[in-house]
Amino acid sequence: MINIFQKYTFSLCLVLVLMVGHLEAQVFPGDVNDDGIVDNIDFLYVGTIFGAVGPPRDISEQGIDFEEKLITTFWSSTLSNGLDYAYADCDGDGLISFNDLNAVIANMGLTHGIVMPETFPGGAFGQDPSISFDSTFIFGPFPEFAFVSIPISLGTEQLPVQDFYGISFEVHYDPTIVFDNYIEFNFSTSWLNMSGNDLHLSLENTGTPGVLKVAATRTTPLVASLDNYGQIGTVQFIIEDDLLDYTQPALQTMLEFQNVTILGMNGNPVPIVNDTITIEIIDNSVLSNEPDLPDAAINVFPNPFKDQLNIQAVNDPIEAVQIYNVDGRLMANFENIGQKEIILPVDQFPKGIYFLKIQTPAGVRTEKVSKLK
Ligand SMILES: [Ca+2]
Ligand SMILES: [Ca+2]
Image (cartoon, rainbow, N blue to C red; front, side):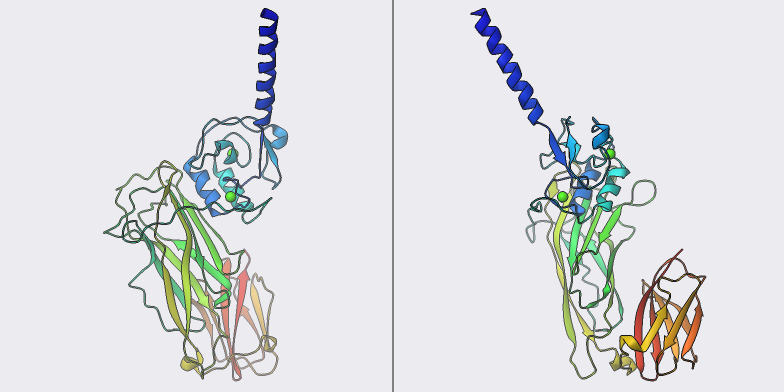
């Protein structure tokens, strides 16, 4: 009997050892929720357990290269979706830190295996707080090449946000309407309190035309009122310049929030109601009476630039050049040029992206350029 018992115990142990062996798992660094794609939701999950410490991966399995990394020891704590914390330790060093948030940013958009994006239940209109385009915003009409900045609010006085740690969302837009697919979300000073030493993290990914992905997560709990509402930032873009001619009626285009996710203080999803907005666009020659020049009519180089920008017109002399920054602010205005070639002194401009509006007697050309350090 004892022999049989011992044999049984030995077999049981063997089975347990084999089972423990099967508890190994693979993680692709950055895909924190293991849904096949690195995106803004993975960013949120890292934030919710920021500072957690656990067993590191084996040295040979550390790093953030987007390949299967073996997890041999779990952390024995789970995210709100049931996955082990080890998935959020993107670099495998045993600490949930900025390195892991940066790993999500570095691998943003990469996929492995079958992609089945994690989904979250939406909010109920009239019951749950909303993310919304500000109702005081004027919907247009905007002339082509106008800079549009739409304030975004989260929560209202009637339906405030009562639980918050981080937010991710997408803004869907028509990529043929947005100039050079250049659109961004700027978080402003707000009740999110993501400034100063507390934390400020946000990311944007315009890799998919027509989809702006945004996320912001705290790394410490929010020390503020639990009834929060008001503006959290702005969606900003410039309208394409060759959409209409003066004979055509105004054009309408829609922007829409999708896949809005808030994770609360305990990491659980908080239901949120989405919103859409329609804005109206008119031909800018209604205002300026200037036709658009074809691409080949103007050469701008080098791009990116450092100290100076050369502009050459093929046929007509250049009359004027305006330079705008990405906030739509006029940075420089060169008038009465009257030559086919001009070299603009732009060494004092800060690093960034600029828009040139080049005027000739035959029409106007807009160009996007970027300044290196
Ligand atoms: Ca993911
Ligand atoms: Ca880590």
